[in-house]
Length: 215
Image 1: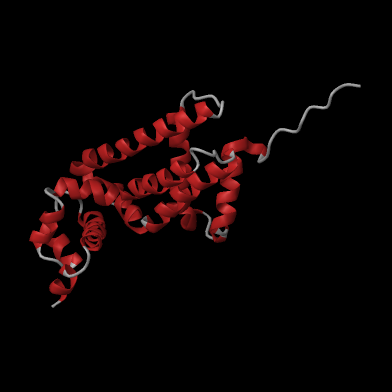
Image 2 (image 1 turned 45 degrees about the vertical axis):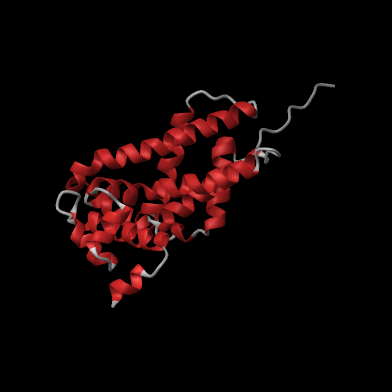
């Protein structure tokens, strides 16, 4: 039986099946009209298995639709710890930050795109989603503020900088094919390299030339 096969899988794998199924069902039917039985059926597990991993529908909603942010935080936190004793150059660290975020949104782009298209049907659960995302952004802002201070960079409105970066990456990963189908064929590495230079240096895409000293 399919359910028995799923239950024999590792707990983390079953949990991910449930989360992926929930993201699809919430996006299709909206928060209010989604039933836990629908999610269980889509995941191929008994409803009791869903409740074994998630106590409430609200908790499952928060995890399912905030997971691009949560996964990104986990990925970047690993890289952040690796470079604490021997700090990486600014460009390398920023590239890692942007690449992790980009990849996480690409992995979950389909569900998020449907979610945004069906926004009105999810009004009841928006508080849960916002709460989960805000927790992740607060941790990221604290991490980046500390890092910028250590590197001697200004820390004014790091939260605003973070939001700008998120909106840019969300736009590219969710809507680039619709807005600029030909341009969207740009490779991942080229996209991240350009975005890194843009965020780090602005429209010059490179460090300011050294000022010549007068003879």
